[in-house]
Image (cartoon, rainbow, N blue to C red; front, side, top):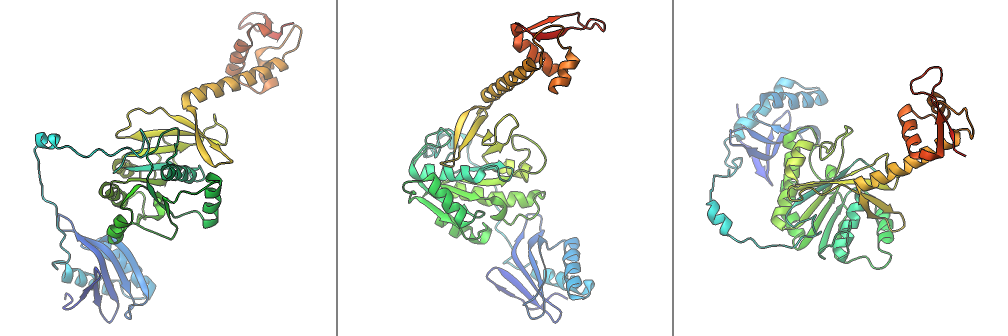
Length: 417
């Protein structure tokens, strides 16, 4: 039988019985009548946790799973706890407190909407970061995301350029949730040998943006032009990054924060182990990509040195921004634009080609009969295509004799005198 009495306080339904205490919190009903929420099963005194999960309370499968977990921890009966969960659900499913105000369609004329003039807000970082938008800086761990975000925060708070772009001075709220205070202080002193801007506000305590603290968080960032969170993985309640609804829900709160505060919100996120470009490697990629307005991705590359990264841009309003190479100034801990990735790539190839050509030249004898392709490959460790390219680069510095594809008199090469 359904519970005859239960309590509701601070957004939580509490159902007590001789076997356990059950609580439902953050309970919502969707347009199809399904009920979702956080479910906790506690010992009868309400002090010990037996199971806790978020899911569809109206689903028998969900109730079975959490009941099994609780029974296993308490050496109890699955069916007993499952029956109690069912009773709790039936008792509360029609409670007005569960009902959510569902949005109804509210259409406006496109002609009237087009005539309405929205206030123009200047970009926070020219050509890159706009107010009221949500962005992600993504990379594999230890790639320099946090340093880039600190560069951006200090640039906006101090009115200085970042990534070769002009910034609009403003207040910055930075949720620094990963690095230690010592690391953060060391970096600030390196990046700001003079005065650290007063308009950079730091939050260093553990934090998660959830529905319950959304309004006070919105109030706390009012007046900020830039809000940064590093990293999103510890600032949301996303537990399964493959669960699209969880990922969407987590990112949506940060997008709402951007829209309702008119601040630019920038999150740091990790790449998954799988390879990919232009958002494909982003954790929770499908829903994350759908929710954010722009993604800046940092990649290591074999064609770049250890202090360089390839930086790509993918955004709704960006158009085709060419990939760039950024280099870390290790004294000031500042990422600086090195140039376009294609140009830097070509330069790197040219340098490597010249170095390889010099290796080939030094391997060649100074007089005939010289070395064949196979012998040059053995001397240098290069493959045939690489040797061929090097010989082309060397040009007149090399002499040759022999016939192509001949087994008896193959072409041989030596240094020109």
